[in-house]
Length: 233
Image 1 (cartoon, one colour):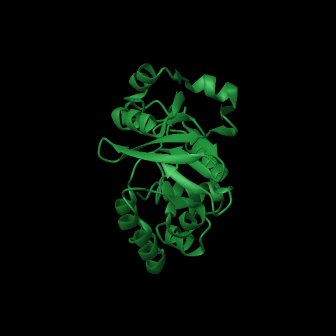
Image 2 (cartoon, one colour; image 1 turned 90 degrees about the vertical axis):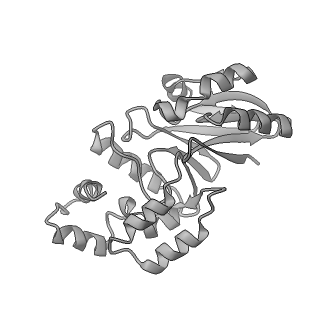
């Protein structure tokens, strides 16, 4: 069974080690020293270092981590061509999820998604690529996973996200429960929870649609509702 170790660095960034038996891969390796110490403590060999996208706050430690451990640093095109990365008996699948950036990727490991800055716990990333259509299709792709799928994101924006969601017609009890489950030492949620509190994936929620209508924002199609919600934050 693959284990996921989460590391906080640079205030709110989150990086990961995925470990299967004696081998591991690093995703967004900014917490270099902490990751190296964990690898040594657990007797793990780091095989690969990868990034969810190429923004500097996610790539800042990756090359150093690869050099210190002898791991292979895999780039965007290489990962997409591979399609999967093998860790002993575990296949980690790579999904192209453009929108935040053109090179944004999600790593699928069993019942978990490492989503980078595409889908956060409680919100989504900014559309720095300018391609809202691609971002919409990426979010729909992720939300097609089962409700019990775990979301491991690239930043901890939970408190800010809940505060914003409280300004919208989203159930207060759902937001309270979401915040009660929040643990800054292990930031994670499941897709079913996101459907209840994350306005950026709730573009078919009747109350939120009525809210958009009242603001004279386009709501006739799902794509329009998505783009209208993206103007709110």
